[in-house]
Image 1 (cartoon, one colour):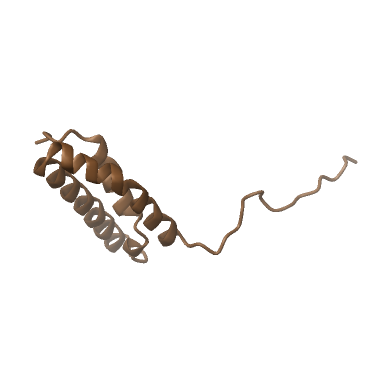
Image 2 (image 1 turned 180 degrees about the horizontal axis):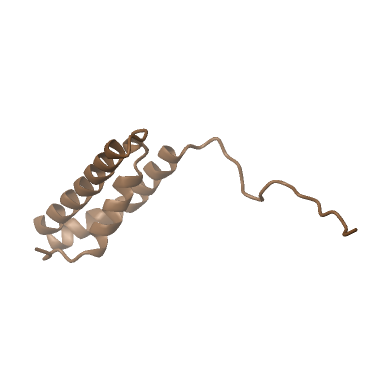
Length: 94
């Protein structure tokens, strides 16, 4: 018979930090780039950021309502997605 292999838990680091805390720290880390983009490109960049973040949060909310899932908007993951998208879009996007 073949040798039995030892099975252990995954090698990931465990922490008491929740997803919401980590995503909030990501938003804080992106603030300097966001503020520089608003300063450099003006109000158009601010519009893109606000619309992108709002659309990401709203689409997650609607999806979770339609799928009858638990609301996870409070963990900032949709806000991070919208902010990253906004920082990659040009300020002149229609």
